Image (cartoon, rainbow, N blue to C red; front, side):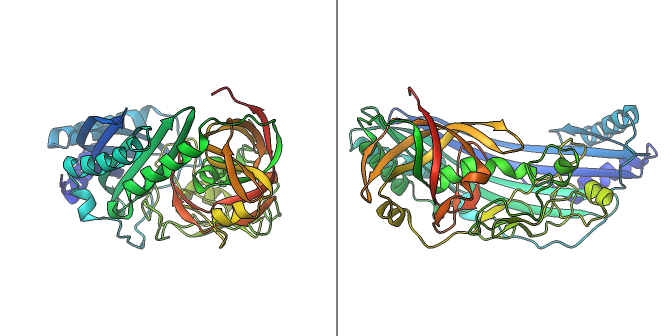
Amino acid sequence: MRVDAASVRDQVVSAARAHGVDEVEAILSTSHQALTRFANNAIHQNVAESSSHLSVRARIEGRTARASTTRLNSDAIRDVVEQAIAITRLTEPDEESLPMAESADYQALDRWSEPTAQVTPRERAQAVAEAIAAVESAGQTAAGIYSTDSTEYTLLNSRGVQAHCRETMARFSITAMADGGSGWAKASSCDHRDINPLDLAMSAARKTSQSSAPRELPPGRYTVILEPAAVLDLVGQMFGDFSATAIRDGRSFLNDRIGKQIFGPNITIHDDAYHPMQSGAPFDGEGVPRQRLTLVEKGVVRDIAYCRQAAAKAGAAPTGHGFPLPNEYGEAPLNIVISGGDTSVEQMVAATERGILVTRLWYIREVDPYEKIFTGMTRDGTFLVEGGEVTSGVRNFRFNQGLMEMLSNVVNLGPAVRASGEETFDMVVPAMRINDFNFTEVTRF
């Protein structure tokens, strides 16, 4: 669905000025989302939705507020501007409030795949049918989703910001189950042709076969091999702390740790919206261009993210990581890239005398915010490694693990890949082989 963004902007600015308001911002998004869902080896749902959303923010004498609508006719646009202005006038002023951002150049990104935008329900159904057949032929039961989305996003304001991006995204996720075992695989890409549902299904089926009749091992500290999705699920929990606002508020584990070595020297982490395996906009929630950050260099904390307000408070430059205003979080890096190595998962297994291979983690909760200790459970493919080989499935574990300790004990890194999980947003991460990972108990499911 095409919408004339320039016309919407002109109507928003005109309606605001009719009420004596000079500063106004409009965020316009249009999307088409389609999903094929399957369970018990059969497709049971196919849905599609096209939508438009307009969010308007006004700023009046240090006050700011936002109102939204899903209607884009002239009356609806005028109404939402009036609502934003009325709410703004009722809010308390913020002494740290800044004038809206001015126009700045940003690097445009091409993350649109027309074949992905045009994928039909039949195409998704055919891919799902092949995946189901692969799992069913192994005597297993499959469940999962195949989705294809296309989105256009435009941010405009009365001070000249005109930021626009568009993106397609495909995701395929499958869980295979049989005989007390389960296996899982997931992939995402801006181009659906980069995803092979049949390969993912066969991987999930292999994990299910290997994990059937799992052994129960005692809890304790093990050498662990975390596949990329498991790394993402756990390490991805910490990046909201790489925020100037979080540090200023005293709610970041990086307080008093910037410039210090807190991870092993083999850990380097960037925030890079321009990485070829990343996704998302090249500008932030105020239209500020995103900068590439070196969050961690050889284990040492280097950069943090700044929104405009936090940067002004600290006397720093904004990095283009702010969320749409008003918000209570400030900013965060969203395009995480953890540098990898050249050791494959198979090589990690071969180098392990005794350890645990983990497909993914779930139900992750924070235990100690400052020491960054988390608890959670393994799931859908947990295996015992003995003598350099996977010898059996094992009952799932609960873990209690600090990230600083864990990322100081990384022995090997795999190649960095785009990984998808359930607990956090997609990232570019490697598999990791880690010493002394702390499993605290065996779960009962």
